[in-house]
Length: 242
Image 1 (spheres, rainbow, N blue to C red):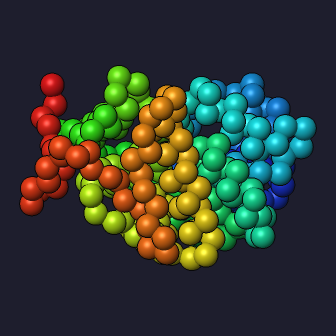
Image 2 (spheres, rainbow, N blue to C red):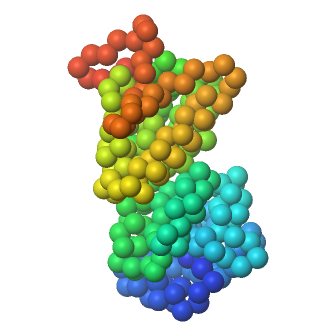
């Protein structure tokens, strides 16, 4: 039974969501303010549903605090027109978002989709390696040279998909499906661009590092191959686990 923590100051809403999620087979705990989150071991939950607008300590501040301590999956609850909240949430490491007013059925679908992506659905045996970028699908770890990358679930899934398709253009539709499990929309396009930018910054964190993710205008993105890299019909080099 997956443990879900819901953080929202609307007690009526959290009670409604708790009842619905428990009927769907989840174990649910609730909190009603950001300060309580800072005193709680949030990473003991399998997933956190976190409202952006919380009293005292905002949901975005809680997310920032949490990401320094844990990679527990987080779904943000945002205002219906809260594009800025969604973008900032993704920048800080949220795995997905649901707009208010909340449809409990949609929230359950989002929770299950994120949990699938954070378990073994994207795990593949062996490693992928392109230039200085290396990724281990079994442990879900990635490196740029000798530097281990701190990636959220969506960021890891994106980088994995780019590595699998190195040298080929990857459309925004593909990225949307891989990272968020959603069909392309104008809002998703903005979220995809935000996600790619964040992964790009993590890859080129070191001074002088080359930007290997190229933007293909009006189409998508491409992970550039090093000059000496060869691709066969199976895709980029796949190395066995050590």
